[in-house]
Length: 182
Image (tube, rainbow, N blue to C red; front, side, top):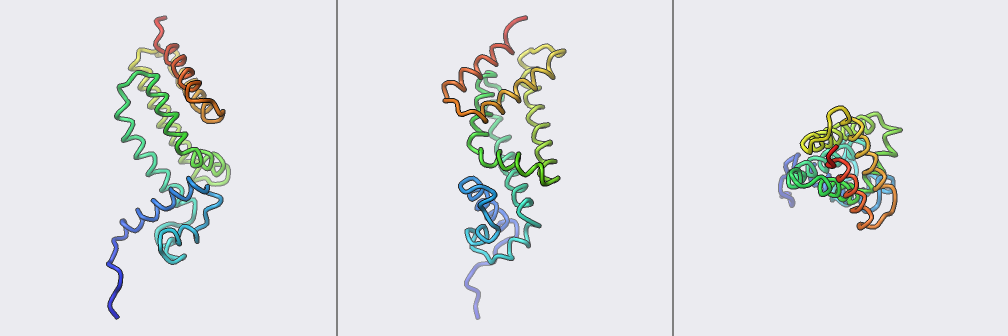
């Protein structure tokens, strides 16, 4: 019997699974997305997913890596923008992925792999804050504290349902503090 489907490269099929997983995790949440529903959405048999991923956390890690890679590429557009714009950009990016952010925080307590990814993400984010603040001339002696203030501010903006105008005002005030002559 002739094959009805064209042969599909392993990496191409994996990428398709990740597109569907990302969509489902964002639309329905990690907890509400079963491996069976992912397989169905991707148009594969249920056990096929396990050829590509060990378990659902492995799928989540791959989705997170893809999202982070995209965001880091996009960040290059705003890396030289004023600090206010950079912080607002970070907040907006994380808000678009709010369900994934919540999932990472919830799963980190249960999955060493997710916890490790989360720790690595914070190291990257804090490194980016550190670089942006150093470029802006923030005093080296207070740099670590200022980085933490930036991270806590972003996390607070994600947690509390403020309007975009309120978020913008907070980011502006934070950037003014960082760039104010001492």
